[in-house]
Length: 469
Image 1 (cartoon, rainbow, N blue to C red):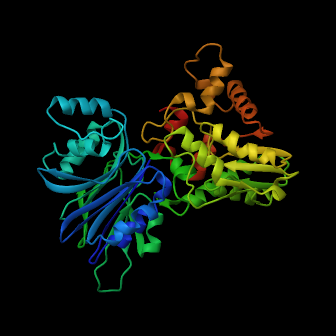
Image 2: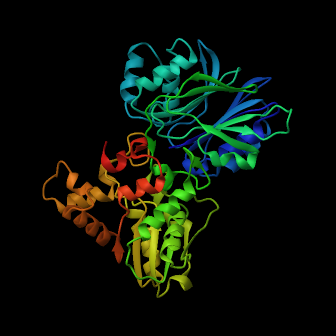
Image 3: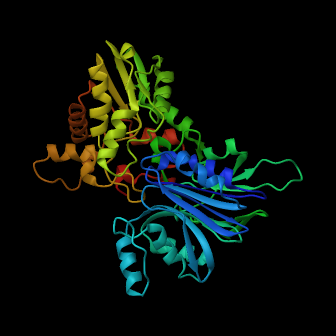
């Protein structure tokens, strides 16, 4: 998915930019960068963070940066921010999301005479593609609108000129972009920040002002927030933000991530007749769900698995399987004295591929003497790869479709019966996944319960991963 952070300030913004961007480290593991506008013009730096944390790679860089405005990005797909020379002048651009028709747009631009800088993998940098599309507009705001209309997928962006920072949320608001206002004494001029994660604000002295609406464009400068394009009418926010992707301390559309996860856990516990000694959550994103389950069920919460935090992020985020496996192996340490002889309910945010969960979580519990393992995922089986972010990449890697392929002698189209949690085929799919994971029991939350736990109207959520529409 990736995360972006921008700030405007009366004084030097570099410290707020550095730490604000770092607060998005849970959203990417491959590339990161900072760009600042100051008296000397634009300065920027980009590094790979695949082998080092953001803080260690950028600490010396930010110390040498001085400016009143800055933008930063952490992203798995594209090195950024980029400095672009255009008919609108020079600007810095950071953009996160997914463009599913990237190849088609690239071919069309090349045919029209455009050129691209080649990336190390031989592909085109998606941020550079976004810039090419914006530059075809009559103005920056018009170019952003045209870009959003041209792409299939979802893009949120920050574009910094010498006049200010343009912030644009994706067309249907699938992913967050929020504005923060600096907390200052009365009479002093506050700064402003804009971020993917609202949790990046409070420790830096900002308070959440408001989210941008779907397709909304604003320009931030030291004088305030200036409307460039109003919000669109249609909203489809990614439900996975509350279940897994988002930071527990963040708020999206006025709804706390942590509270939503606790409500998911409570929903899973209601009607669950399993007998167990304690409940636990797979660190970190499964913890909130497990706390809710414990509160509703009355079971104690314990920690049979402890995350070794330094150096190990999410095992789901890295693009290559070998890196995902390494992180999954190393980041969780088993507490044998808690595990041995225990019956446990294990809450996790989701089961996507299932291979890491089986090989590096469940196996550690069995190997350390678990008596029973009852798994409770906080979202329904993921049935379709995401079309709007680089989360689930192909349908073949989903645990649900491995089960369907094993159960059907021929390819089953459509798969509607597997989407219905009351059907026999759904029951067979869950049983196949349970056996594959090698757990005592497996029970998913139902989609209606998940929607209710999040708290937004169903029509305002993107549920493509579960419904395919």
